[in-house]
Picture 1 (cartoon, one colour):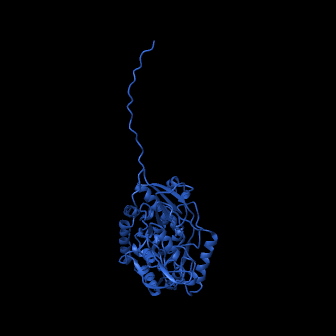
Picture 2: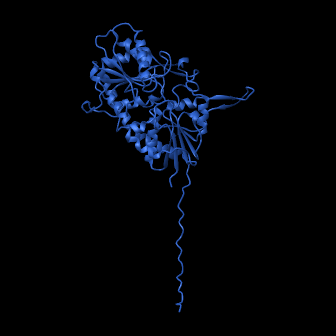
Length: 429
C-alpha cells in the first residue's frame, strides 16, 4: 500500500498560490508513489471555482476530501509559513517566501515546525536564512536566538510547455480587440497593482506608467503600453480604480502622451499565452521591487520575445542577463505605505530601479528592436530546457527521495491453505 500524501492548498482559487498548488499536486500524482488526497483551502479574498472553469484540471476534484479522518504519512501545506502546522508523520511546508530582505519572526517559527520546507527561488531561501531574531524572557534578558533550524530546498515553478509556447499569428483564436489599437508596437505589463504610494507599490506599477509616459511623450512615432492589471479581483470597482490611478499619473506629465490600454478580468492560461503571442505585443516590462519567483515573467519567455525587468530577487534564477535586459538599481527600505502587518516589514528592504536605465531600455528596445530579438529566442530555449513543468516534477521527485523517511508498508496477511484429512465414515445400515 502506498504512503498517504495529504495536501492542504488553495488549489481551486484564482491566485498565484492556486497555480503553484495545482502544478505541485499534478506532479506528485504523476510520480505514482503515493495515495494522494487534497484538502482545498481558500486564499484570502481571491475568487473560488477555478477548476469548474478549467476542465483540464477536473481530475483534481476526485482527490478532494472535506476533513482529515486520520493522520497521513506525509502532510504538505501550501500557504504562508505562519500558518504551517505539523499534522502528518512527516510534514512539508511550501511557500513563495518573501519579496523583501527579511521575514517576520512568526514565519521562521512556522518554518521550524515542519520537517522540510520548499521555496521557489534562491532569493526566497536566502531571505529566510538571513532572518535571525533574539529571544528575550519577561525581564527583557536575551535567552537565545531564533533562526531557521529545519531544511529549506529550492523548487522552481515549472512552466507548462503544452500551453505556454510560440503560436503563429494565423493560429490565434481569442479576440482581444487589438484591431482597435492603432499602434504596431506595444509593451506589456502583467501583475497586480498592490498597495503603496507612487513608486512604492511592490510591482512598481506607478513608476512604470510615469516612466513610459515621460520616455515617449512628444515623439512622432509612439508605442503603446498594455496593462493586464487589477487592484483586487476582477470587479468593476477594481477596474475603475486602476483607470483612475493611470489618469492621475497622466495629469502629472505634460505634452503629447502615448496611449495606455487596460486589460481587466480573469483570463485562462491559454488566453494569456495568446496575449503573449499577439503580433502587436513586442516586449514585456516589469519594474518589480521583489519577487518570490515571478511566474508571469517565466511564462512570457516562451513567446521568444524580449523582456525588460529588474536585476534582483526570485526571477533572476531563470532570467539570463546575457539574453534579457536587467535594470540595475539599489536596495531601499520598504515605504510605510506598502507595509503589510507581519508580512511586508518596514525594517526590510527591496529593489529600486535606476530611472535612467528604465528610460534607456524602453527607448532602445523600441528603436532597435531587432537587436534584442535573438536574446528573446535564446532565453526561450533556456526556459524550455531548464524550467519546464516536467523538469520541476523530476526535481521534486529527487527532493522527496532525498528527504522522506521510509514508511512502513502494509502487507496483506496471507494465511496458508490448510490441508484437512479426508474422513471416511462407515456406511450406516
